[in-house]
Length: 211
Image 1 (cartoon, rainbow, N blue to C red):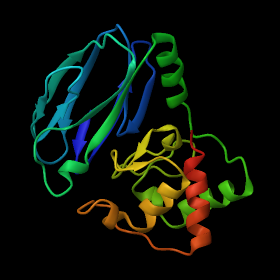
Image 2: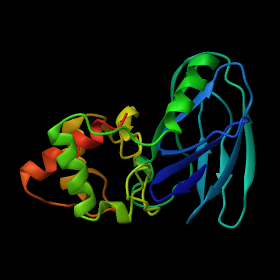
Image 3: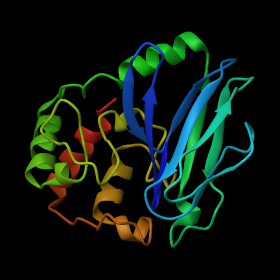
């Protein structure tokens, strides 16, 4: 797990070799020990899920290890516990503790490429996302978008929130985030991206469908 200004890059490596990359959300199997490799891409961050364990600093140039074993299912809140700049307070992530079978099924889905568009508006949204150059910063596996600057969006529609806990996850939130990013999260690296309303609605529909 990598802390960035101001979001979290999450990479899963399961014992069976399954890998998946996502952002700003963690899911864990209840009753099982999960090892975290923690690092930072920029400044000092501090990884903390208060109901599950103590905080761990993430220091530039260092890699630290943390093991958590949740004992009950549910949804908990994690975040950065070290002031790291303008949007420090807007750097949260939900932690969903699941039954092991449900977790295994979820991880298998996360490792798959993005689902194909299911409607004309989603197909148009995918084409506009690529045409506007959003894939220069974001990856969507199964498409030409291979950016590594920002969060991986392959299954972004399945997440509980957007912008590292800033917004709920729905079409209106996607539209709000894209068009007014700097108002929603001051200091964020991604600039606001005004575009025609029809284009914005189509991209939001496609992203919302990436489950």
